[in-house]
Length: 273
Length: 278
Image (cartoon, rainbow over all chains, first blue to last red; front, side, top):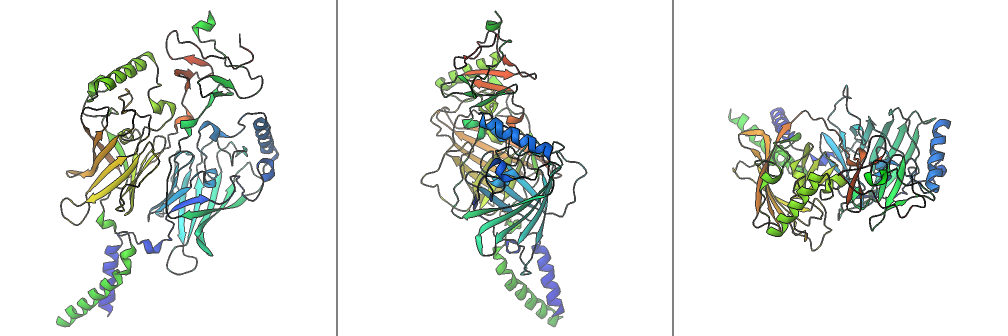
């Protein structure tokens, strides 16, 4: 019998090449945001989010909200087709995200607005000595079997190396310019409903007076239908210097606010004459 | 000895019976090892075996040959309007398989995912046995259905045959502006496999069938594997200095001024502004 156990163990070792899907949660499908598009889905937009910002960064937010009220884009890089970095990308825009679990990496595939890809490394690696900052950041995850049933149920993730410019949501709540934000997440299925995915997100950033935790939820659509949404495809915003302009459907440059000066055309010969 | 064999057989049976629930598992040994970072071998011209630009000799119809020549003339004059990625649009299929930046391929039983670093271009190749859906929304990457083949009969798949339809425009084959037919009825067939002589080289034989072509056009692209991956994000909008107003291509200088891209180019029409800057 001891030999039998030994042989079984040997066969299992060979099977280690296989990805035993039964050890991982079933997160297949299309996950569509259930919550509002604000960073904290439980609170109103803009100043109503009551982000725990330091006074210096509260001023940045207030300026952003004021600029948007005047027709500008404020501190919202996504308006210029810059991807929504971590943690904003986990708001999950449009038709949702897909999660692909492999033993070494869990991939988070975003559709809208810019086909972003997150790689969450679960291969036991430590933080590399150096890595290039990216909008998605560098994520290391660890699977936990919290209910002890032999199947992982929680993915605990830490993300560092997030590149700017980025904001929490479209209102322009800012991150510290030092680029040292750290995001910790706990991702799991709702125990009461396996078609709901929960992401508890905690942000540590020097623009905050305290860590900021929000909880986002996503509903599963098993009959997937993916649409490609390309930010640049229908993009009419044009940035020239520090000014935002708009290109009309019939191809004319237009102001985005009352009495906005046109671009300086000093480099065109016809104007110089 | 007999008793040991007898115990062994029992153990084998036990092990096999334990393996039955494992049918849920994704048996990686059935699929080729395509892990890692795949970096383009050869130039960024669509057919890497031929010189760029005019040397590509695409089998275009006369009508589309004229469009290509106009595109090349625009390029020579400094314009890029014909080249969608200059406007931060995706390259789309099949151009995305030029892999301007490294590519990752994620193989799962139902779907093989292809991600290219430049502007996060991304494909899903469905290998779950589905047929073409009655309708689907066109996409730059198209809609791809694949079939795994075990050509050498060793019990492990080695070739992925893919057909892609439903591509959206505007697209061109490469930066010189080789056009597709405006009807967007392009069909792309691929044969993706590891090089039998070198498992760190991936080969994609790409055949394009399009009404702008006089015959199907086949090219072979190769990629080398880097197992020690280092992914870098390339976001087109981040430092794209081109500005497109109507049909004109301008660019914005480092100090924030709108600049012409060709000699004697007219500036944009500012009729919608209340004031004009002197």
